[in-house]
Amino acid sequence: MKKLVLETTSPFQGLAELVAYDEGLFTKEGVQVEWADRDEAGVKTADTSIKDVKATNMFGSHGTLLEQGKADMYNACEWGNYCRAGGTSVGSRQVGRRAIVTYAAIVVRPDSPVYTPQQLAGRTVGVPFYAGTHYLALHLLEGFMPRDMINVCSAPNGSRNRFNLMMKGEIEATTLTEPYITLAEKKGCRVICSAFFHGTEVASDRVDAETYAAFNRAVREAVRRINADKRAYLHYFIDYHGKSDPEVAALKVEDLREGRLVVCDPAPIPLDEMQRTYDWLKSWGMLEETASPLQLVNMDVQRYAHQAAE
Image (tube, rainbow, N blue to C red; front, side, top):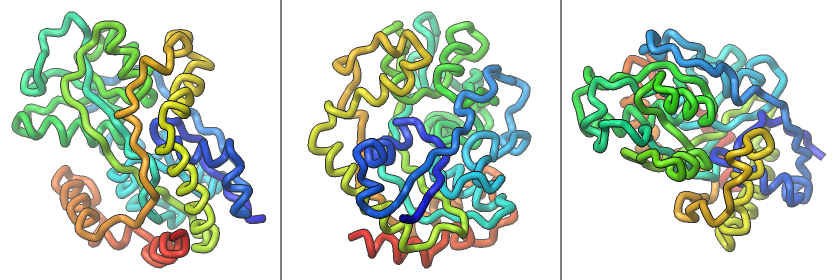
């Protein structure tokens, strides 16, 4: 049986993988999955003076264990993984899109004077640099204001940490994922704008195409099971965070919206979307040393593994 060591993942970014693990689907495909624990909570303070993503560590959360040789794969937002594949010291590459399509939102406190995205112009929006909601915030906000009026600053990983900082007034708005969007709404906070975004899997050169294909077959079956009865799997969002967060533990499955849980079969990154993502990241001053988006993806593994998983 082939062993794969995965960096730990939260339900909002890896539900299908968690289901595949819990329900024995990886084992059925001949893959022994082990989890390498990373500190998902990380730093718990914001630094409003840091407004440039390049002043922070792209491996501060995702990818740190793979870079140290302690994990074979991890998944994270597609934008951040372009940057990590561009900055890797161990030759890691993206090998395809993950199953979950993450829902996230920019949220403000109940007493905030902000009611529309346009009113966030110049206001401090705390984001976890190099994580999905950082890039999502840029995409959402640049639709409502000039780029020079977008005022994002460095905030910690982990929605709970950012939510606490926002409620204390240290940042005016922040990005959240589930179940913290639901918790924020229950506390009277307002969702100002929201959207879904893709993520990708990143693998070291130890992951061969056959193993990744088997991994994908297990994930595809998990996707089928989740889509057949989403309500049966919403408890993951509560259980995962509720172990250390009493407010989340007090949520009920009925509080969560099924429409915010979207999973689809893992698939190759479409070439046209790959190019647009690369161009957009370049426009924000990232990927300066990367000449082509094809440098950031193991095209051979991606092509074979997804064909073999059909």
